[in-house]
Image 1 (cartoon, helix red, strand yellow):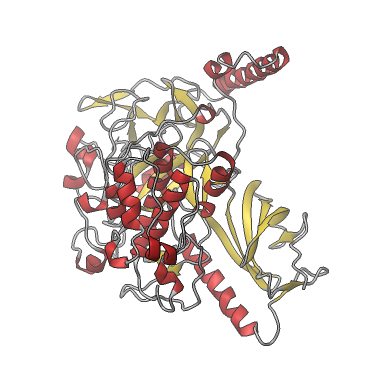
Image 2 (cartoon, rainbow, N blue to C red):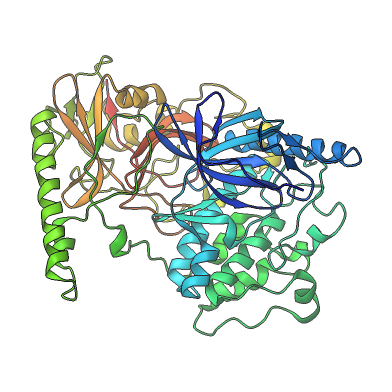
Length: 564
């Protein structure tokens, strides 16, 4: 049996992708680091290759799918691999791995994902031991938001564990949907392939034949609770059968009582005794501490300007701002300090040059070119004539974050849970929705549900998706990462008249507290429905911008008003 992977330099899709190296091989596939040649974009490619049954011809790279006796089973698994890759590709959530492409080649199936340069939570725990409670909860809240969104699309992950959570900057990303299942509106599974088991994280029903035949969020709730247990203790939880017989081992007394109780309830032996949704589980954590501050390593200034192409190759290279350099520990050598100073001087020169090349793209943005109802706007000379506000709804200046809002809600609030959402409707009752129904196309907020119109009055309103795309259009504006008033975000400079506005990376909320502030920006459009809405989203760590769809409507995101 030859379990060899594709060699470095191999190409796929007629040279579209070039393999750089093999990252790893699991039970169902081989994962590669690759380059999308024409886009000059780093990507990750997963190949369907079950090592116990598959073989590869070295000359042609073709994969044989086992002997005659198991060929049918391999075809079934490969079909599931392809179907679920296409299913996940339809998901759009900042905490779920993005899939860019799915194709067949070499007698097998491949899918192309975003490349994440960080490490898994499992690797982090192995290296440094247990994670402090506030940090662990920051990750769990993000993954909880991802799971809640997946569940709203009738998808169960079924393999939530630290090894399947990557940390990319300050962002936790749920990966490996290889065991996931899609369910119909009636709650029945749409595929019947066997379910895998991750001991310690899988509840008892996953060990039982037909145990996850029906849609049951409680299964993923168990795994999320078990994951939190591992992060806080550094120890893999006992198997579900051991938990059923002897209970869960004691949790350190340094962990808050609300978190202890939440873990114990999530990992209940009986499914009916667990929280019945991710939102219920997250509510149990409400009294737990929230700390969304970034570590020193995440406090970076990024100066490479680029257009609004979300397919741009991400970069992990960064230069700390001057305050970080000046506070370098004395244990650094003089030569090392000189290198930092020279590097910073070079960056400063680039910044100065960029100011002359792109007026308005420095650290100062344009003053208002006009005022409507007491709020300033900047005319960017856009083809539509649209005027963008100088600051976020509820903010007093361009660098201020302002409050977050759920889509369609007009009042500020501090926590964002699905059960408290103004338009919340249980999944089973979505067909009965009369306002902003998910099945209706081109939903747009009514004036009475538009927070910008209600709070600022006059002609102010939230932008449509089309208007956000106009702002992202390379022909209209230049998007460059920078800082205004000490806050990181995107400076958007018009290519028509040189005027500029600033979008701070205000983060988002998927429960209690804010995550991603200083790294990510999520800005509502007026297009969406009671389940999901479209947003302007950006990542100043990876230098990515774009329009996201299907983001859960009850999430807390920023609003940047516009006026005709």
